[in-house]
Length: 372
Image (tube, rainbow, N blue to C red; front, side):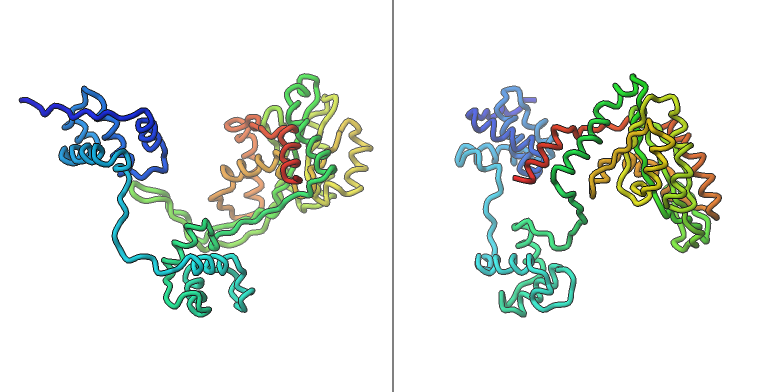
């Protein structure tokens, strides 16, 4: 059976590069990328149109029509032509006024609501005479074009970027950079952090296990059985952890645990202890206790509002995801038994040094960029 000889296209190098960019860019719409693939394939003499049509799920006539359109109009035929329809009714000035309204707090225009939605923006825009008729979908398009998202928010906490921050952050980052070398010299870097007030929740009904076609189901009603305070230690160079439960999250309970926490490293020439500025850490009694009984301990505080420099926070997040989520305990003692059995298992299965790429040099560049 004779097949129709391919109608070869002769694309310029610039056109080939442009089409390849469309194909490789993950943001390109699929119909546009498919047309680009057709034009690129039709430059190859061994292309079989029927096979190309099957691979791209197109009709052969569609491929021939696209080739003819390319020869008539150029490479822009891969893009969608302007669509017919009713022109936009809002002027550029009206669109800007909608954007300004979205950037203004509702209280600034005499409203009690705490944040905007597209429907409330459309309602207020009509009431204030910005546009006599405007729908919430039109407002959504205006906000999308302006890259405004009034429905979203996030918390942030920025440290004071000064010489004190540089000094304290550099101390912490130096320990992370040198953790392996320090371990070879019988020095150890420890990160310590608390996860206070872990709620002991007990479901009123047992969970129903998953079955084929059904996920695990849990009764939403539960009973609170108290809270547990967890203290965790991370050995930076190995990624291994150990945890303790504290009766209260205060300095007295912390000092009661410190002999066990530091006793695991009694043979170390020096201990670099990193923790945040919690009251139990900065208390004079705690610092005096360490100076008196553990002179080999070098205490390093993270900068104010920068506890994220403490790798123990990463540890607690990873530990909670594996050993606290979906937990169901009938009492505080049951949760404490679970925690005491969990940290050795974490060490067996998951312990490894965290990959920490933020160095002192990057920190100084970051501070300089924010201060400039």
